[in-house]
Image 1 (tube, one colour):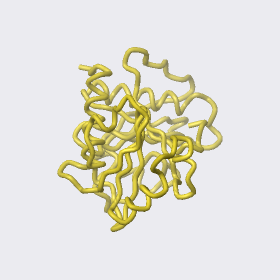
Image 2: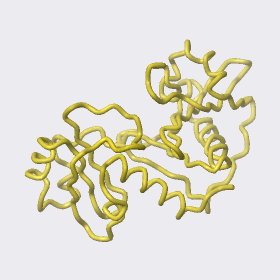
Image 3: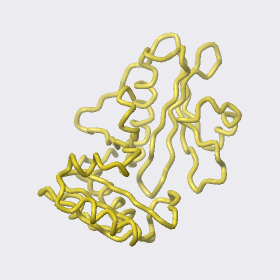
Length: 221
């Protein structure tokens, strides 16, 4: 059963609160504010690597949450306190900004398959055959030493050749992160949208949450 938008946002906020070592209320504050918290690897946090000196900034509403190790938290407070949102996100040490999208379950609809292509959904056990085709590195995790791997992939084929892949990794109890890669000569045909749409519905029908993450400079994605 597909969960409601409210349920989805609560689960995502709960996970982010664990990851950032803040509260759900910090993330959903209705007033413009900057909240500083000391970073901590809490039980249940997603297994993304962290250096000894760590800094992360996130906003999903009006408030901004800054989570960092003590020495970087002190620098952040010195540079950010009393500043507005635009100034904070324009600071020279803020780099690699990502946008994270959740589906609008009231509006999203299944897309019709594209002509001239065939499609196949494969599970992790079948993905070993993709590991020697590193051209799909935006969709498939090739580093088998990581704590998370590609769990599902939707393939687009033409004449038996894989020309596009949407892959997803389950990074925590309920959240699946989607990536997409389409070969250059097959772009701008709607393949990426269709593959992500198909994979999104497969995740939703499992009662889970798909997330599409993209670096802010890649507006086309």
